[in-house]
Length: 270
Image (cartoon, rainbow, N blue to C red; front, side):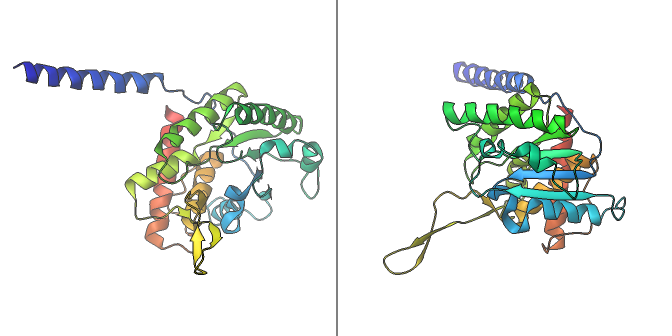
């Protein structure tokens, strides 16, 4: 009887903790933006791998039922291994360059672990994003955060990045695109879909290719999933059923579209 009571007590405690965590989890205060026709993506290799998230996002738009020729513009500016702090200088001039001097949304993507690595990188992320958001608004555009994904098999990083981006997003009154949460959801529901690609480290003594231990860059499926999340976030519409698949198997593309929409809906309903 004692064992049974102890077991029940543990279960009740765990349930209470889980419920308390769910109730206290930081929630985004900005839930949407007006549907964006002109979008500028700012980031690094996370954004430009696989011909660029901006390209896949634009192709989703082009194959949607509301696309019209000349009605949408997408641009991407990336720095390999770049941090947002590197974009501050000259950012005002960048947004004013032709052919489009007026943007609806500017997406800001920080270095993969910059918002959580240490005190210095966190401070840098907060300062740079604050300055960039101010400049974006001076151009009558809306800044949007790109919540990046965790490194492969690094589950704690999912929540850490979520909290970092939502905290700063709320502080700056910015929308946050929950790409990282969609990655985590896809890995749980569709583990057979590989969202990461290995990075080459070099050759070993036998002249065999050696790959880096940490997998963090997106595969084509990963970039496509990210684009679907941006479609859902910036257009406020479901990507489910769009015919553009980026060359992925149709069933896989449909699964990623589903995950993107489910994640986005859940994130903004919190």
